[in-house]
Image 1 (cartoon, helix red, strand yellow):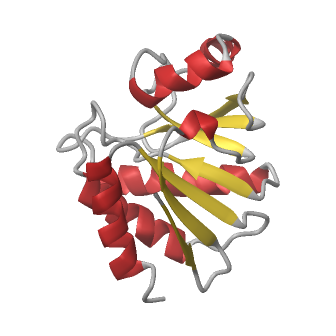
Image 2 (tube, rainbow, N blue to C red; image 1 turned 120 degrees about the vertical axis):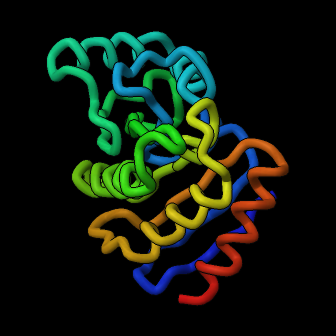
Image 3 (cartoon, helix red, strand yellow; image 1 turned 90 degrees about the vertical axis):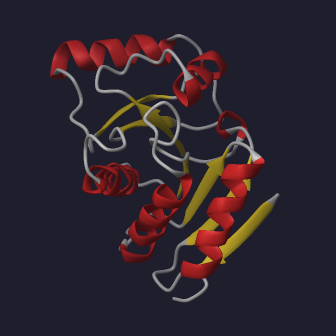
Amino acid sequence: MVVAYKLSNGLEVILENGDITKVEADAIVNAANSYLSHGGGVALAIVRSGGYIIQEESDEYVRRNGPVPVGEVAVTTAGKLKARYVIHAVGPRYGIEGDDKLESAIRRSLEKADELKLSSIALPAISTGIYGYPYEICARIMSKVMKEYKPKFLKRILVVVYGDQAYSVFKKVFDNSLYMN
């Protein structure tokens, strides 16, 4: 299941139900924790598919720079993945840190892709797993950020969600917000 949206800022947004580790994009965004310990969910899937080098580089990043603040990002190579980079976005825990931190994590991911002069990025439903964010809130925030973003190099955003329920909610939100540019 795939649906595409063309935004007034020139971005093409593709919503897909699938495995983010299998998509073709210049960068894949990982829904990470502040210590970049990739022990479950999307993070573990990325390390399993891309190789332990991603965890090693993440550990080195934290050793050198300290924990990544909520709402911020860190970058590693992508190991054996089709992507060139993994952008590790630290999303908030629902009900603990605010929606502004989720907005920041998404926006910083897009900004980092532009800083790296990438044309495509794959985003998961950040913070909707163990951090408990409802799909609808994540989709609304993601939609807002993508519509407001002013890309420099970025042309395509793949929003890759896992499961029929997530896809259905994201599609409904995107149909209502992204078609009405």
